[in-house]
Image 1 (spheres, rainbow over the protein chains, first blue to last red):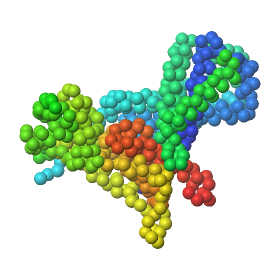
Image 2 (cartoon, chains in turn green, brown, cyan; image 1 turned 180 degrees about the vertical axis):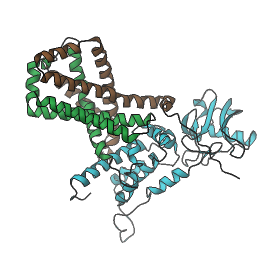
Image 3 (cartoon, rainbow over the protein chains, first blue to last red; image 1 turned 180 degrees about the horizontal axis):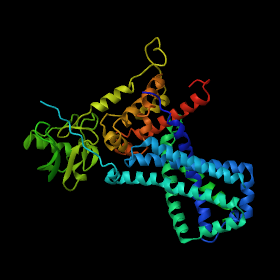
Length: 113
Length: 130
Length: 246
């Protein structure tokens, strides 16, 4: 029985789970306030643009997007298996590729800011 | 004497409906759908931000739709459930031995909850939410 | 002490005559303070001597009498009749093949226990006077995981073991972890071949059902997550910093 390479995908999953646990609810709250018509000052175009223009913010945002999408992908893969979808290699490829695609997109958009 | 062991089958999809603990487990796993969807919404927002002030305003307008509000409320509930289950499970994965005894689970989880609250309040304050 | 007329709905299976298991109802007069095992024993003694099931200590230390009681994995000697007001459904432990009646085939479990090398592989040879020394703190580090009585309730509760029979399972991995955490032991690398394999800890999705049903509060779920984290740190250390000692 060989030692598995699962840690490659599990490490980022665990990191992503931790990041989303601490951050995602408050981020949702920010845009929920905007949705209810009380957009926080930070969500005004100039303020947000100023923040997202900083190289440190770009790295942080890209990192958060990657970890959030990766942990989602990993959980989705496990859930598919739990629900009887046995083509694990195929599901894994699709979900992780999706996470990487989303991350790549965010990097492209951040580079335009 | 012949041995003919009988193998019982498990319903491939509906197995988790058999007991509340499996339903709670599936709910926890389902939180990833909302967290993933919200992250994609963030990526969409980044694109509109990059496309200029008019695009950004249009994005904010989209956020104000009833569907968006419903999504946000659901996403907030599921994301919070993820946070709660994650922090409750942390002391199991990362036990801290201090001297002979272990730091109580409640202390480790409690510290995470406190950090979560402080961080959230700090972000809300810095973002000018209040 | 008063009596209670108890209705037991027991899953029967005779491999010599039955194609499939079927339920059989027994009605017997029990004492209020009894456990399900007492009820089964009375059935066997006075009603149906063909009813087959494993049991031994009747005090939750031997791990023999594990079965599904109203759909929940429990030790029959620890399932009090007062907690089951209606008809009590008794079935063999889930996720194991049925040998006969409530007796399951446990060969898979026994093989998996042996695979994890559940014995001390000493880090150093024994000292001259024959005793290893261990502080109370070092003992406390693994003591919890020594409490396993091999009752297999965790395997019956684990949905991943139900769906993926090759999964080594909670008790086996917790047992490996017990030795890995023992200060006298140096065999962690040897056990990783089984534990850190695909069918080892990585089939676990941290459902946590195993710890919920464990009668000895071993908390196998905790052991498995700790093994995952250690294995992950190992892996990244080995691949990113191969010059360091693990």
